[in-house]
Image: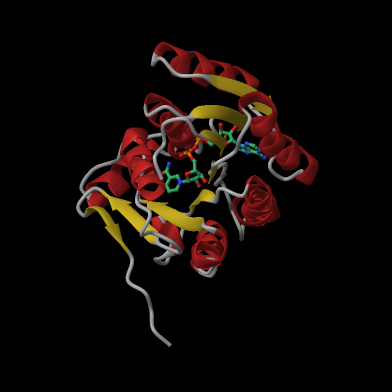
Length: 251
Ligand SMILES: NC(=O)c1ccc[n+]([C@@H]2O[C@H](COP(=O)([O-])OP(=O)(O)OC[C@H]3O[C@@H](n4cnc5c(N)ncnc54)[C@H](O)[C@@H]3O)[C@@H](O)[C@H]2O)c1
C-alpha cells in the first residue's frame, strides 16, 4: 500500500514504538490518530509529527474499553475522511506471577491480547465499510515466539497476538485487508526501564548483542504496510538478525 494520503490509527502512540511509528508513517504522508491514555505523551507525539511536516491528532483511548477503540477508529474518518492503517500497539509488562500481589497479570492479558483482538475486530469492520481494504499491524514480541521465564504471562499474551494475526491471513484475498504482527526483541523505551532493574537490562543487552531503537521497529511497520505480499506475516526484529520473517509451521 502506498502510505501517502492514507489515515492511520496508532494505539500506544504517546511513547516508544508507537510514537516512532507515528512519525515514520507521517513522514511518508499518512495522517495519524495518536490513541493513548497518556495525554502529555500524546501531545508530545503530535508535536513531533508536526515538526516532521506531518499531521496528527491526539485522541484519548483506553484500549480495554470497546467504546474508546470504536471512537478512535471512527475519528480517523471524521477528521481525515478515511481510515486505512491500524497499528494496535499499546502494551504493558510488569508481572510478578508468583509474588504476593502477582503484579496484576490479568491486566497484561486485557491490554496486550484482549484489546488487540477487540481493536482488530473493530478495525476490520471499519475497513470493510471503507471498501478500499487496508492494513492492520499488531505488536507482538519475540517473547511471543520464545520462552520468557521472567514474564510468562507477557509471553502468553504475545504468543496469542502472533497466532491470532497469523490466523487472519484469509482476509487479504477476501477483503483486501492484510493483518500482520511484528515481534520486536529488546527495544529502548520506557517499558524496559519501568521496573528499575537496570542490572537485568544490562545483562539482557549483553545476551542479545545490544538493544534496538524504536525507529528500528517503526521501519518494520512501514515495510509491513507497504509490502502488499505480506498477510498473516510474523516479522521479527532483532539486533543480530535485523528484520526477517518467522517461518510458517505446516500442519
Ligand atoms: N520495549 C520492548 O523491548 C518491547 C519488545 C517487544 C514488544 N514490545 C511491545 O511494544 C509495544 C509498545 O511498547 P513500548 O516499548 O513502546 O512501551 P512504552 O511504555 O514506551 O509505550 C506503551 C504505550 O502504551 C500506552 N498504554 C498503556 N496502556 C494503555 C491502554 N490501556 N490504552 C491505551 N494506551 C495504553 C502507554 O501510555 C504508552 O504510551 C507494547 O505492546 C510492548 O509490549 C516492546
